[in-house]
Length: 112
Image (tube, rainbow, N blue to C red; front, side, top):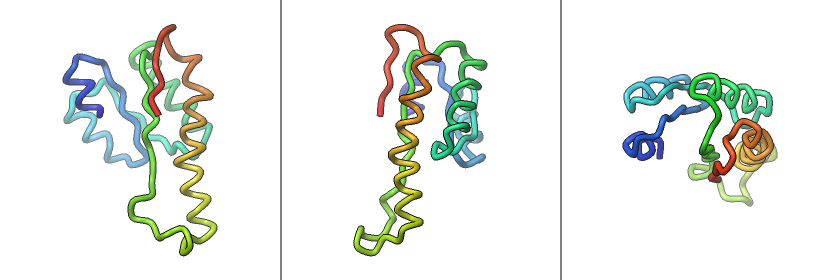
């Protein structure tokens, strides 16, 4: 997704929980990389603030962090893993929705 935006001429800041995302961001020609865990509200706020510091107010925010493909079926899911999945897949999106708008230009879009 990031590569598509970059190829279309957008200035992109990439965020990922893994520090190795910095290498991918550099390879793609992104304007920057911010390491963040979307399950942590303060890290989402800090990542958005850093993106704004790097490129100015945002036009598009994409909430696409998620886990679930390599997980057990729901009847085999333990409580800790269920909480982790909800923290990332639900709260991570909610934190983006809560904190991105004040850092965006009027008419911007949030894609979940």
